Amino acid sequence: MGKPICSTGLRWLWLAVVVLVLDLGSKVLVMNHFQLGESLPLIPFFNLTYAHNPGAAFSFLADKGGWQRWFFAAIALVIVVALLVLMYRSSGKQKLNNIAFAMIIGGALGNLFDRMVHGFVIDFIDFYVKDWHYPIFNLADSFICVGAVLVVLEGFLSSSDKTAKSKG
Image (cartoon, rainbow, N blue to C red):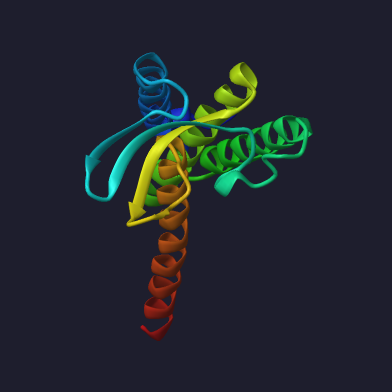
C-alpha cells in the first residue's frame, strides 16, 4: 500500500487549486468586462488589455494553423503528471519545491483549460515603457514563472546546504 497523501508533497495541492481559481476567475472578469483588444490604463506602465493567444509564451507558434493547440495541451498534461509524481515522491516537509510545483500545476491547468475550451489562452496583463510593450500575459503565466524560479532557487539552496554539510 502507498504512503499517506498527507505525508507527501501532494498535501500542497490546495495551492494549485487556489492558483487555478484565481487564474480562471481573473479571465472571466476580463472576458465579461472587456471587448477583445480593449485596454484599460491603470498606471503609467501597466494596462489591462484583453487579448487571445493561440500560441505559447510570447505568442510562440501562434500563427501555425491550430495544431499547436493540441501540442501545447499535451505538453501541459505531461508536465502536470510529472510534477504530481514528483510531489507524491517528495516529503510534505519539502515546502519550497512543493509550493513551486503546485504553482506550476495550477498555472498549467489554467492555460490548459483556456486552450481546450476556447482554442486560445486569454491574456490581459500588459506592462510597457513608452511605445515598447512586454508580451501580454495572464496570472497562470505569472504563477508558472514564479514556480520555475522557486525550483531553481531550491536547487541552489539545497546544493549549498549539501556543500556546507560536506565541509562539516
